[in-house]
Amino acid sequence: MKKLILIPMLFCLFMLNVASMCSSDDDSSSSPDPTPVINAATQGTWRVTSYVDSGNNETSDFAGYNFTFATGGALTATNGTNSYSGTWSVTGDDSTDDSPSNDLDFNISFAGPANFADLTDDWDIVSYSATTISLIDVSGGNGGTDTLVFTKN
Image 1 (tube, rainbow, N blue to C red):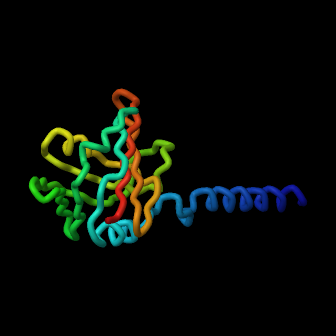
Image 2 (image 1 turned 60 degrees about the horizontal axis):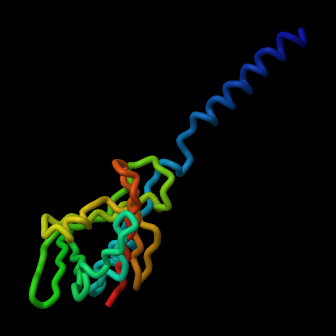
Image 3 (image 1 turned 180 degrees about the horizontal axis):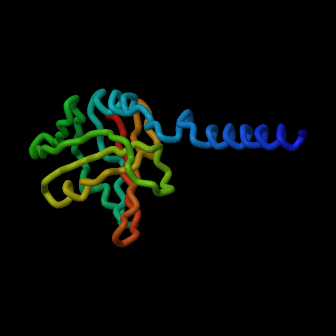
């Protein structure tokens, strides 16, 4: 008789354990809120204080340019003489890599000129504040690492 009671009890415990393993209550599938990054970026103008492309410091390519991240996704870079238009957004990171991102991508797109088109990427956000946005991209093709830092003017 004791065996007859023990078997259903073990079955119930097993089912409870399986149910808890299948629960969707964990937060691992939720994405971080992009709003704080967007709010920081849209406040004022920014300059590139560091751009390293696969080990080559190319910061000087952007000397004198002010970047404006407008609400609605418009991006402009101007130095008073030249002005280039692009787009930007902050979205959930769809990769499963172990980069130092916070699961948000800072997406930048410029059609040209070539040095601005080099910024076109879905950058991982390393850190951000009201005055600094630090980004990184590890290339899937050649394995190079690019870093980009914007500092508020």
